[in-house]
Length: 346
Image (tube, rainbow, N blue to C red; front, side, top):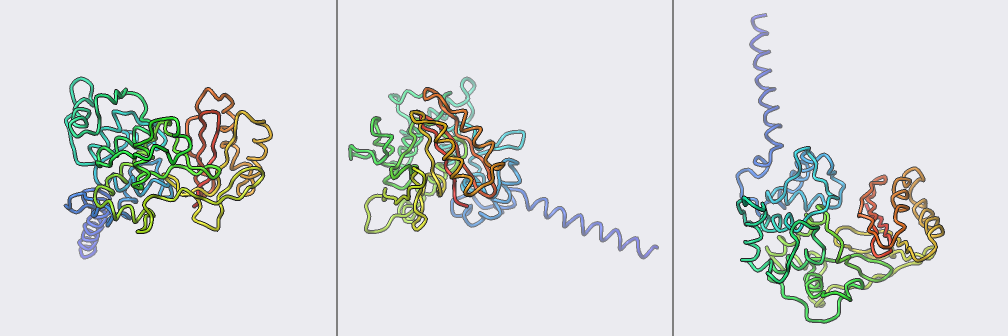
């Protein structure tokens, strides 16, 4: 018994040490191993950062489209979640929150002000030229996608486009020079819709979208030419291609599978369905269900279709919501009288 006891104690100490190694191994400081959290470092440690991030946020999965960008941003200590252990990827972000996130991720750390907590970040943004007095933002309102593109371009010193014609069909009637500039630099791609490219400029960005866009901005700043090349640029083209081939299925335009389907800002879309409130809704709902049932079961798409059916008034907005059906992500949202259902490839 006397011989067994020391062996048992030694085993306990050894097991305790091993467990401590695993516990410490999950920490961000251990992953970074004393290195400064640069773009190069977080890219090299991406697999471990994805594991860390999905453990840190209970509502983030390794299959989510934004997980790599979010994990890099977490590794760079540029974003955090909530006290309940969630990230809330579909939560909308305010102008103030976006300003802080963009600047903090770019390395500008400001003290929280005594009055409006974001005042010091706004002051720094104005000093850097990211925000001008004429912008007249409501910092407590949602961050519109058009303004997000503008602030990112200004941070990166990307000059506004002078083409005078927007590449996005839904940005023709607004000042789109910053949106088009971001497109030309491969910072944004927009959405494919019935052969046209849209950007949803007035839609409020979500936390997941912002994580993706801010990380793109940081990678662009590190090496603009390398970033553009990695995102589809080549030596023979001066601007990104806007053409996509579509096949018509039951009156809907579906991207041809023979090509790279549709590269959106955030994912690769396999099917895009639009429901127009000006047309017969019952027919469109039936046809939409028919298309989705070719890939999913009726029970799988029930909650998704119930959400779609809530959108019946063109004067309102159906907030963008993400559904996980099988191993696919499906985004649903509606504005300006059109609901869009986007099935992303796995």
